[in-house]
Image 1 (tube, rainbow, N blue to C red):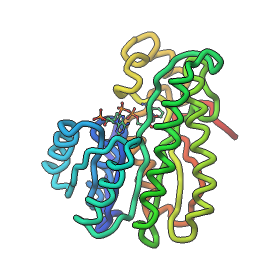
Image 2: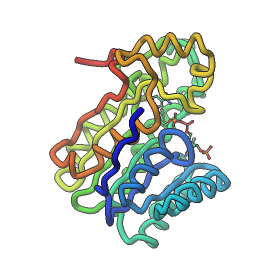
Image 3: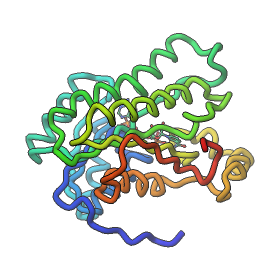
Image 4: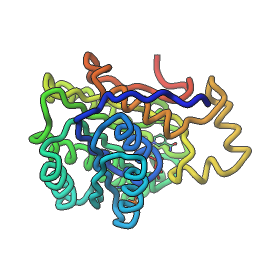
Length: 255
Ligand code: NAP
C-alpha cells in the first residue's frame, strides 16, 4: 500500500487513547502523535505501557504512559489527573478498549461473559467519558471504537456484536448531550489482524474467507482504523457529530 502523507492536524492538542499499547489503539495514538498531538497511552500492564511510550518517543512523538484498566475507577481517575497535570487540558478521547470473552449464540452465553461484555465494552466507555467530560475543551472530540459486527452480529460472537451495537446508540445520545462543545463520533472497524482476532486471522483458509467478504478483497489494517479515527477527531470533521464511520472494506453493514 502507498505510504500516506501525514499532516499536522493535532498540533498543540492533547489526546488520550485507551487500550493503546498494541493493535488498533496503538496505531491511533501513533497517528495522532505523528500529526502533532501529545498522546497519552494506557493499558492494564505497566510493561506494555512503557514499551509503547518508548516506540512513540523514538519517532519524536510527545507521549505519556499511564496504567489504566478501563473498568477500574481509580485508574481512570488517575489517567485524567495525570494528563491534566502534565498537559493542562484534553482535546481528544478515543475509547478503544474491548473484550470478547465468549463464542457462539446469545442464548448460550454465560451470565459471567455477558457481565464482562457490558462491564468493559459499554459501561467502562460511559464512565470514561463521564470522567473525561469536566476536562474537555471547547472544540474537543470523542471517538468510540465499535465494530462492523454492531450492525450484523455474527453468530459466532453474537453477544460481543450486541455490546458494540450499544456503542452506536451511545454515540448518538452523547453527541446530543455533549454538543455543541464536544463532538462524539464512532468508528466501526471490519476485521483487522491483531491479537484480538488472531484465532481467526492466523488460519489461512479462514483469513481468505474473510477477505472474500469484503468488496476490497483484503482485511483492514490498524493504520486504516487510525486514519479514520484521526479524521473524525480532527477539525476536518468539525461539522460531523453523532455519526459512525464503517471502515470495513465494503463488508455488509447498513444502507
Ligand atoms: P488488541 O490488539 O487485542 O489490543 C489490545 C490492547 O488493549 C492492548 O494494548 C491491551 O494491553 C489493551 N487492553 C486489553 N484489555 C484492556 C482493558 N480492560 N483496559 C485497558 N486496556 C486493555 O485489540 P484490537 O484488535 O486493537 O481492538 C481494539 C478495538 O477495536 C476493540 O474495541 C475491538 O472491539 C475493536 N475492533 C477490533 C476488530 C479487529 O478485527 N481487530 C474489529 C472490530 C472492532 P494490556 O494487555 O496491557 O491491557
